[in-house]
Image (cartoon, rainbow, N blue to C red; front, side, top):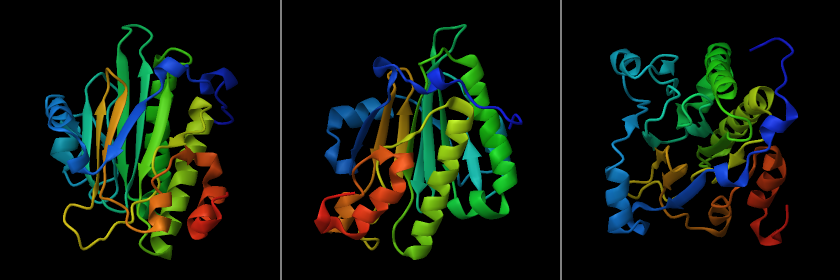
Length: 246
């Protein structure tokens, strides 16, 4: 990270027409036409469960197996599967030279990026975010966070620390308080296909998030989005869903 660098304030003001549109639901909630459109995106895999050969092929930064994967910034569509307790970041911007929309997608284990691999992750993530900042037009960048799990207090601790770190990096490099498009996942973990998936349609600035239905009142509360800076208040609402207040 550039020592003492703070992104210009105006870089945090994303133009309304440049914002990412999020489409969230269980796989069955997407109609056949939408599922076909997603399939036809021919998205590049940002494969957390991959290997060095695969990551190098797509110019993806990583900390080794079971840590994190950060995609290249380019015009390709991107996809990552099976976010268990992992969090993700999706970002888009308009390249200054080509005029194309470019994007970034990540998949990281909260425990790894806030503990053992924190320093390396910060270096790699900052590098990508600065590349996005430097190469994209002002007001064209938007960022969304997603993923995480809420099975127990350990999950929530990792989720909280991950969101706080991502917020800090985005504010430092982009001047953006990122939007958490949907809270942590807490379905019936005994059901089939409960993991979160993400597909990023770069050109149309559209993020598809699949996750299983959330069954209880408290879990349903995590289906709502919020600004990363509001996490503390939102967590209070999750703990006391009947209040309806933050």
